[in-house]
Length: 141
Image (cartoon, rainbow, N blue to C red; front, side, top):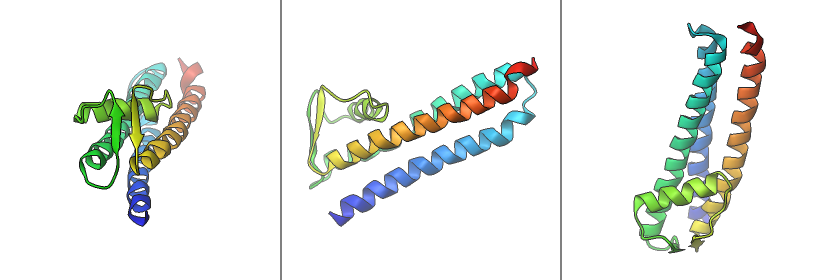
């Protein structure tokens, strides 16, 4: 059980650090962009989507590894064990859309639950960041 906890913490810490770095870099970069203020928001949205996609892939690689490693559990349903199946599962979990066609079993369930919580927090963080950037630049054009 300790190894499950440790792996989950490492995965979550990795995606949170990635997200922080993306948001921090955008905060530094946005004032220096030589584009109209309203296009800075578009740049921020694309950057945020890139960060979220990268984070989903990190979770997906973890699910893929867990599924193929002994003792971590398995996925049941519309899951053939491919990396893209793990990515699909990760996207539906990260966005808290929920999984209906794939069900995790065993220790892999804990990472699935933590991914939902992490995705909710990071998506909310992004929304707050973009709102602040919009209020900062929206009326300058």
